[in-house]
Length: 171
Image (cartoon, rainbow, N blue to C red; front, side, top):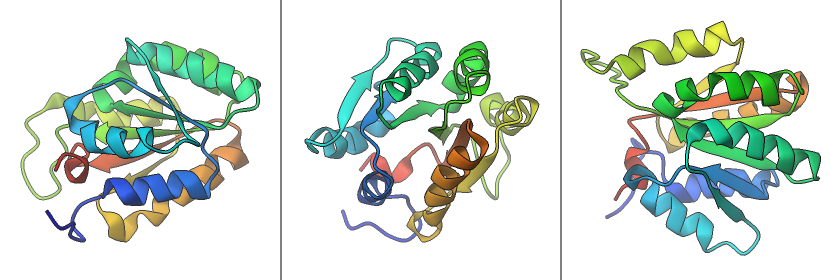
């Protein structure tokens, strides 16, 4: 299936990770990110670190960063909310720069939102004072780079909200 400009392709995300020196991807395995996982896992320079709960991702990212790695967290918005205290304690309080790629479950750009996960995602990020950037397709994937730059500037987490639950990743 050929990629179109209306999806965010795994190849684009992989390239952004390479451009910014990502060494580790902390993620909770799920079917939505299967094709992204397959691509990233084939890269010998990237280490895939699976977690059993999203709440563990921030602590793992903080430990890896402290050890000299450059991690990124890949989770869904429901897991982001489950991770609140861990994000606060490990990434915000310890000033750990970390991009969190967050699947924006329930997001509908032009429709009626029927999933409360989408309703609470942006208010959650605002409550935690976490900057975020919405990425809907390859055409606005440069916002991923902005997030990497921003997390270094603020010494803390920055989220990339990936609209349509990684649609382009699930071919």
